[in-house]
Image (cartoon, rainbow, N blue to C red; front, side, top):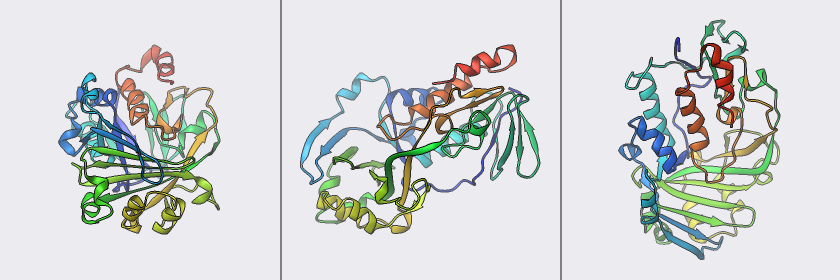
Length: 320
């Protein structure tokens, strides 16, 4: 393409409670780009333990042998580390093509989908062969195709990180980290706690999904809301005393809560020279499908040479 440009509204910042799964198919894509997540702290997914809310073990599955059937490993990785590695690959010229130029804190105020222009808040107009609207759940670019409405899925999620050393130091909590590379999942009827390690088993990532009325009663679409330890413990008061004792040790300033939103179906995710990718076009709620729904279409885009007379047809091929 003529140029590679990325315009972001928010400055880069450290993310809180943001580990993700890299399934074997996702890892296959990254490895084609010479990105090996184990080089920046990813843990293999070696064990899965499912528990009832009270801590009774229902399943304890050793995944080391089953995982050998896959061509690539299944990893648990901190998103910040992965994001930094992808940014380095895109901007420093390590890969093929023209390095991307990142324009941080550059709010997009208008999009011309037919001519391929975006207008920034400072008045600058930027053109490209293709505009990729990958600006998340509260997308600005989406409305230039259809102003689809977001709505609540009925769930919200507390997210936070706790150092593994904190769990190891507690007489009640040490048993939760007796195995490395292990995901623990406490299942309730309408809520669940997911805990797994990242950063070479030094951090424990928590995702605590629950009815959104218990944390977003006033405003159910408030994003990145500050949560409290007391609130989490109340929502999960009937759960395993060991996991509650560990949650009680979280740094309150790092505890956030997000609504899990859905959206009415878009008739199309393309218009003119623009295509929507990721949550901008099709929000996903957490269903253990890992990073792949975001990574796959982004990768497809890079290989399609979307320009010239074939542009409209090829853009439509990116729709999921």
